[in-house]
Length: 345
Image (cartoon, rainbow, N blue to C red; front, side):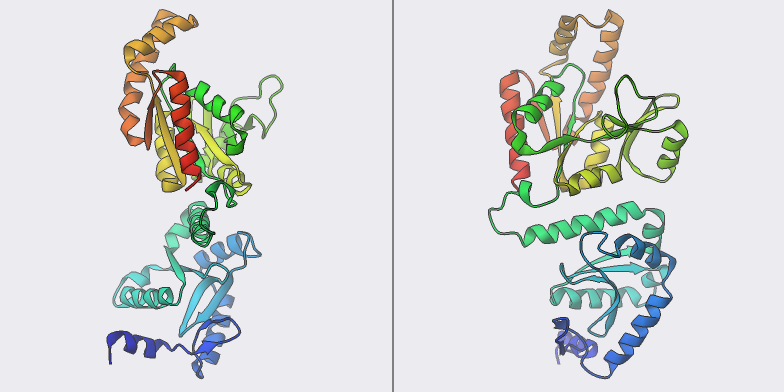
C-alpha cells in the first residue's frame, strides 16, 4: 500500500452528502459530532476571541465552528470559500503534533480546502492582523474564481496605492490629477487620525478622525495603526487599520500620501495588495530650484527641506516603482499607467 493510501485510509473519506465534501462515513462520525459539540462548549480563549470576530457573517460569509471534515474536527470552516482556519496552541509544535498537522493540512488541501493556521498568541495579541489575513485570503480565493478578464477594480474590495516623495517633487500635483481627471479609478484618500483640534469647518470623519492625545496613545498601545508619527510632543497623525478595511470593503481604492517610513510600513503590512510609488525630482539641484521658485520658504527652511529630501531619497529603492518627475505631463502619464495596470491585475 502506498503511503498516501495509508493516510487516506486512516482519515476516512466517504462522501457525506449533506455538505458535499468528503467526511467519515462510519460510526466515528457520530463520535466526531459529539466531540465537536463539546469543543464548541469549551473553546480556548483564542478560539472564543476569533469566533466573536467572524460569527454571524461578520466577514460577509458564514463560518461553521468546530466542524467535522474527514476524521478531523476543524476549528472554523467557511464552505463558500472552502476555507479552514485553525488556532493552534503551543502544544502543536512539540513531538509529532506538527507532523500530524502537516498530514491533515495536506489531506484537506487535496480535497480543495485552503488552510490558515494561527497560534494562540497571534489571535490574543493582534486580532486585527489575524482578521486582515483572513480577509485577504478570502479575497485571493474569490479573485482566483473570478471570470478571466474581469478587471480587478470591479471585483468588490478596493486596493491600496501609496505615494511618497520629498517636498517639491510634484507628488501632490500628480495625485490630484489622478483623482480629479480619472474618476473611473475610484480613488479615495485614506482618512487619517490626528490628536490636534479641528480647524475651521473641519468635521470628524471627513478631513480627519479627531482624537485626544490620550486616545491616540491608547490606540498605539493596541497596535491599531498602520503607521503614525508624532510631529512634536502630543501632536500625532496616523492611519487606522480598521479605517482602511472599511474603505476597501466599500470598493474604494485607497490612496496614501505619506512620508517614506509610513509608506514602507504600509507596503510591508499589505504586501502585493498595495502599490507603492516614489515620486522623485531629477536631482537635488533641480529640487532646490523648485523650492526657491515657490518663494514660500525662508532660505534656512529650504536647506532643511533639502537635507530631509536627500535622506528620503535613500528610501526610493524600497518602493515598487520610482517616477522621476522631470517632465510633469510624462510623469502623470507614467503614474496613470502604473495605477491602471495594478488595478487591472
